[in-house]
Image 1 (tube, rainbow, N blue to C red):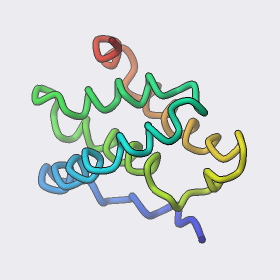
Image 2 (spheres, rainbow, N blue to C red; image 1 turned 60 degrees about the vertical axis):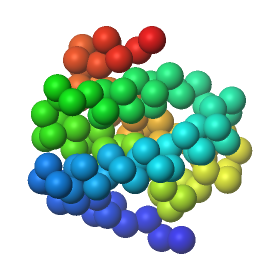
Image 3 (cartoon, rainbow, N blue to C red; image 1 turned 90 degrees about the horizontal axis):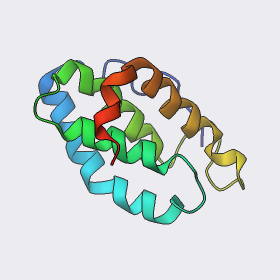
Image 4 (cartoon, one colour; image 1 turned 120 degrees about the vertical axis):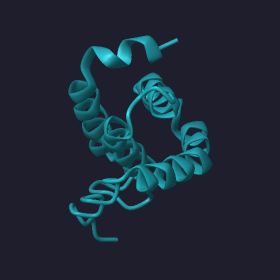
Length: 112
């Protein structure tokens, strides 16, 4: 499995494409979190990003980066395969942390 760093580039640059990405996240995120939630300590951050993505008051262009990050998280193909113990989630963590830094304090209300 080869990782293509440009896989998500330009994929979520319209409201329609963001809506398609949201649907895919809805369909696959909870299964991934159920499988990995006890292995990773950033599950609460993933949940907060999901809530942010589902908020109808967040503009689509702000959601686009979150959709891309969550799809990367649930994608079986990534830079470091999730099958590798512990280190397999480092790339996922890096993507999630980068998005959290990008969104900043906007994300705080989405933590429960």
